[in-house]
Length: 353
Image (cartoon, rainbow, N blue to C red; front, side, top):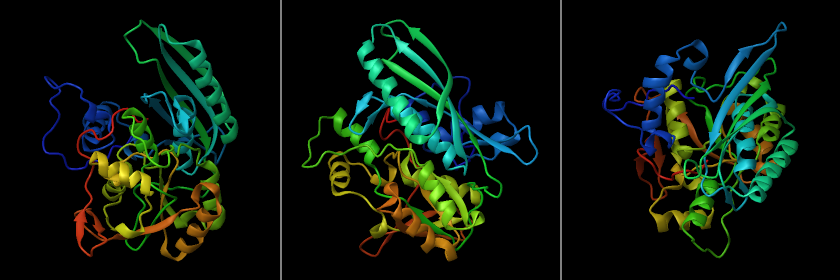
């Protein structure tokens, strides 16, 4: 739960205001809701860091734990490349992994709607189990609730994860420095556009398939390729996409960023779908990609490690960290110009994770 303050215009109206979809989109409105309501009321040192999980003290000397939780309300529940079951595992495993932790255990909470077909529920649970086995984690506890027909949307899943953080690892959104390099592990926007293409019945020469995957193996490959302190920041650019993720890091670290549009990998199918729907792939959600900000002298080794892993074969160096008191993220376009890459404003793709 990020506690970054992205510079919104006016405070929330906590007396008369109402929840809207933008509060769950991962952009400026969501950051404002978290900062002004949840983080203010629940304030503690762990929340203040604003990262994807909390590093917690463990019983033994020198040990550290990481804990993270996430709710999953994707629509449709089944999509090319996965379903809400596998997605719920991947989402929490990835939140732990980008904290530098080795994911160990998950808890799962299910909210089921009366009348939902048991055959479909079985497919979801079996997919969840397969994803957990592949990621090397166990679902060790859980809870199930059923709501009346019409009061839910089939299945909602919340997963909470616990991971072990090895000594020396401390990636965090506040650690980026001018001169650091921005790497991305592959093509952007595939999850969000797979959901949207199915929802809108869009047909392309090649089907757009969600990139939903567990990233803990890729993260371990990165730590094997460079000193731990060379990896400044790791993030999985989910809701709000790459653009919002990088704005969040820029605000946390007090830096700016300069990106190269030509270097950012996007598949022709995703680019075409975004053009058709009037969307920007930089703001479209991913569920199997990571962003790594690293020391420049180790960028080549880390990029090579990404490309040697099955989930990073199309990894790219896409930008550099700059000294900028305004914390702007800027894009050098393919025609030689520049444009601002701001936080996501409003709701771009509803119910994608």
